[in-house]
View 1: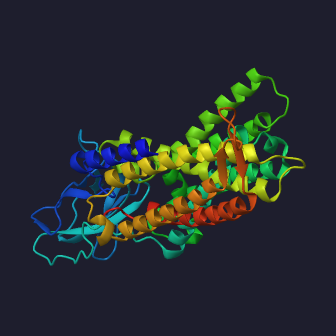
View 2: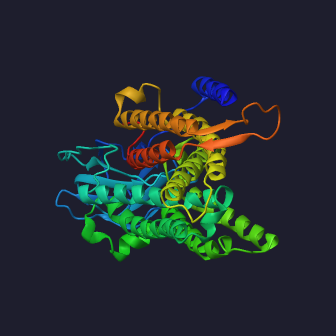
Length: 442
């Protein structure tokens, strides 16, 4: 533990001094015409330069006149070699007057950014462009709440699936425990269901529309075109493959070679599930994306192993199999939990320092406040986990010199501590879900 703390201190110092913070969401760097520009003749196109490459997003730029009539024509396209610049053509021979450009982009971390800017052709008045070059999401309240709930349930599903590591490494008897297998299947079902829900919600979430638009074919097609939609399909395929693998992994008396193949396949599919989360969140806005995405993979994976193991351990403590000795189970999980907590702490520090625009973000923004609450919850979790470790006593028989170490477990204390840890984990996961929909810069 001392070595882990020393490494953590080194990482914090290195990142504070040398890290380049990530931008929260995609931003408008410039536009042509510029906001408030007065032109002698109508332009042939309107272009926008973004802070990141978000690809070609259909319908992301719309130009209307004072009557609200759309005057752009054709699809959004890239007018030059710069991947960050996108444009839309205008109808020919537009009359003098004011025109409002409405933009709505989905950034690399799956969040919508929309706003307006205006220009005028001729000598007429300039239309007001309140919200010009803004980062307001304009997301429908019900859709936003549903999206946050879906993310939280998805995290719970991944945590329940993370209990597979506990079953394979700590409690072999759980392979044939119907309730333990039910928890794993419930986790897989939650991940699959929330993936479908996230896919249909993304269209209204990005377009600022309400829940009735979740099955709009146009919005579903827009989601499928962007990286976020493709990663959701990858997640769904990976979890389906994991469901197929589960019976093989948990089958008793399986040859070692066959079991090894199944475990390797499960690790690959589990990695893909985790990657689909890390590659659609705030880490992808980091200029050095590899660092943040890797840290997020390690962070989320360690949380899933630790919290999923806690759920499975609680099940074993309160409903053990007939004649089962939980002492070696608790001892094995204690070691696994120690490594998981170390990874969580180090990767969490890397993520926070890479994603936040500045240290002052902690006390000046909603994102910082949520992060502080999550850290506080994690600290309380560590305190309760310490109580769990004290309930697992390692030592040697009285009067013995050398020999084999013994492990004694205070099951009553361990039961209480583990249940509290599980409840706190649910709260921390809820805070994590809120963080994913909150811009780091505000």
